[in-house]
Image (cartoon, rainbow over the protein chains, first blue to last red):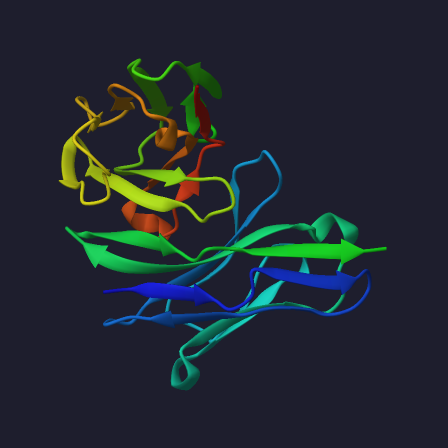
Length: 115
Length: 114
């Protein structure tokens, strides 16, 4: 069974300060891990993904995440927050089912950015 | 098409009505997924198709929920005798084997049952 835990339901930062959104996963297999972002009333957009290549993954809009197998973590970071980063962020783990990979979502972390 | 297209974008149904939600995946995408996202929650898996075969329907919450993809492209999620707890955003996603397990989402169908 696969699961993912997002440790914070809300994260509040000031514009220009670093962002850290935490995610831990459990997986019986080598996982594929993703971060998606969802702006209000918008669809889910892929930020970045890890699929057993480099452990430090760079995504769009300056975000990156590091896969740490020993800690079963895949935290999302950004050096400097922008107002437009305010959104809901989902950590996702993929598990195999019937020849495909079924993504399982975390409950989400709401990122609030103060001016 | 360029992306996953869902319709209707917004639907208000009276309790007890049947609804049908359509998903048009990205052209050539073999896999198709349906998710349910309640307010303030993460998306929950409902069902998955590979071409026209429904390989996993373990997430469908009750026998009032039914999904089909008869020709391996467009899919329809049908909810019979809607209840208030069915109010949610229904997300469709698609992928293809070469996408590295990445799935691409539509903007969702917002269902409100009154």
